[in-house]
Length: 86
Image (cartoon, rainbow, N blue to C red; front, side):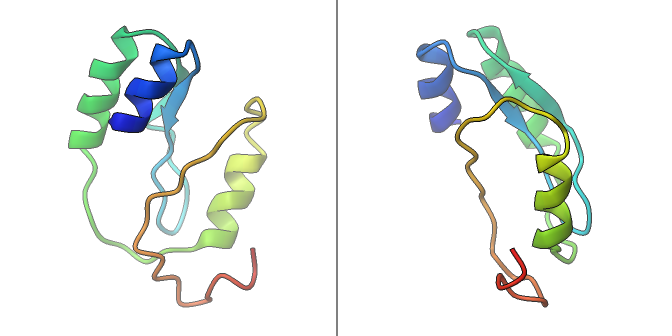
């Protein structure tokens, strides 16, 4: 939430793409103060758990065609395949 507050305060966009075995689009990147409440609601619905597949998830996000920018990954980084494939 803090990173989104800073980003939207600077007229940047923020989105939510939760991933485990695959990527989900919970909230496409949006800007404006109204996006803060949408993001808070989206984050509150996320369940914990599941295996992580960084390689598949990162490739899917890259293929979505979003504009270039900063991507913040919040994870426990417990991928059985490790981070070497990325």
